Amino acid sequence: MGTDDQNGNALYSSEEVKQIVNPICDKYAPGYTSFEAQGHWTTPEGVVIDENTLVYVFYRTDEERVIAILDDVLKELNQSAILVEKNDVSYTFYDGLQ
Image 1 (spheres, rainbow, N blue to C red):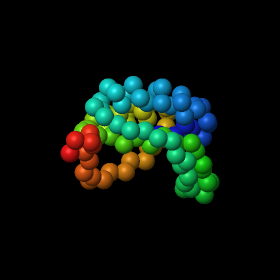
Image 2 (image 1 turned 120 degrees about the vertical axis):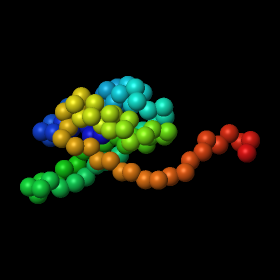
Image 3 (image 1 turned 180 degrees about the vertical axis):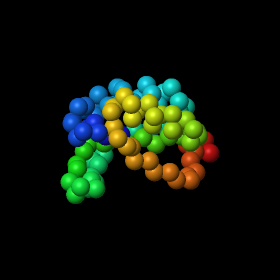
Image 4 (image 1 turned 90 degrees about the vertical axis):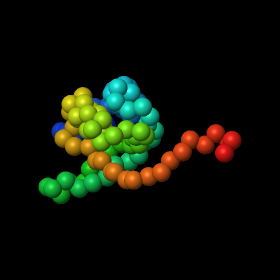
């Protein structure tokens, strides 16, 4: 989730985005991890964009709930799109006793 709005305005710091997005994630997802990254892409008009980005990885969250998160975030951050990567993964919470 980027820190710029759909008009390319850098409206938020990464910390401000977390303060907006985390409560939305808490509403729909029982577990997630977030980290900061640097987004980079070229628009259809050929403009190169670099943007501070937050990456969220959701656990035990079905696609319907992820879409609800995305809908709320698009609205709250005034973004035109959010990159979604979907993978089938296996995970466990290691407690040292296994």
